[in-house]
Image (cartoon, rainbow, N blue to C red; front, side, top):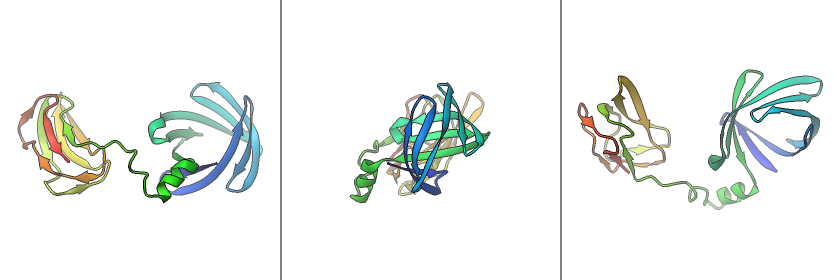
Length: 169
């Protein structure tokens, strides 16, 4: 049984069995079945209740249990949780598995155009931290984790080398 969150909003419960050309099981408590044909490792064709669906696997992140699918040209982001993920969440232990990052280093040589955080700021995963210009392109460096900014080592308008410390959590 999986809990599937679609586009970060709507959640479904699914317990499906897949075979070479067929699927069956329960979806939100309703019995379902249909035809599923694997075209190649990233494309599938689904026939369900007389309707045809083309499915393309755009991205998979197994460590985060996340999939991005394109179904009939519409993108969907799926977050999967099994019974063990649900148990860890109910016990408040789900964040222990997340990799803790203590610092952000420059991924390439460049110029610090803008610093978007200050020491003491609380940031969430995905928040923009600073803008680094490299090879005439502006790159926004984002937070890989939730945390509090301990130190901003970068200085706006200065050049940095690859692997130079920019921000500490």
